[in-house]
Length: 284
Image (cartoon, rainbow, N blue to C red):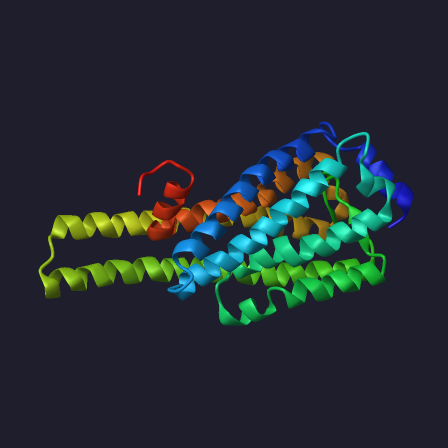
């Protein structure tokens, strides 16, 4: 990607080059607070008895915390008059590498399937190496991120690979949580019959669990789908991914680093209770 093109992209940012960096700085501060306090809570209270759900949640929180730190730095260095991503191509390269190994890995972990967990870090790293060594990186129209350049051959290859994996992650998320909701309803009916539990209480708990899982599903789809749409648009016609489109798409992607921590606390009641004690909102 020619240096002058990155500078031109920055000059065409809509509505202002200040807006998206300030948005990400605000989100990242909250995300870092959540990530650090949740990690501390888990290691303090659940280190010796950490089941697989908490382990996955901790891994996701760790990735989101790193993403928050990465985006915070990105937001600061992209504030005018610094705008280092457009002035120095080396900054664009470093942003692509760190973004691929944290944020994209975090998105793939959401898939919660064994194959993807083993590939969630290696695939983004391989793609980052591919686009770095072939100069297939460009500044996004939002001015906040450097991404694959769809005008180059290897940039298109990177887009296709990430589109496939991100689509698998979203499909796995939808399938898994729908199955869990159905299983929970059937299991509650069985418990009610076999154990003689109070029907009203069982229904309330079942609806509460279903509502939590549906919230997870809706929030993650709402945050991740714009990322996939951006990839498709960039793949078939980069000219459609204008500065205005980027302004309305890119912020949703960044909210993932915030939503994941919030969702983890909603689902893991025990962790949430200890976390509330840590930040002073609840007594031991």
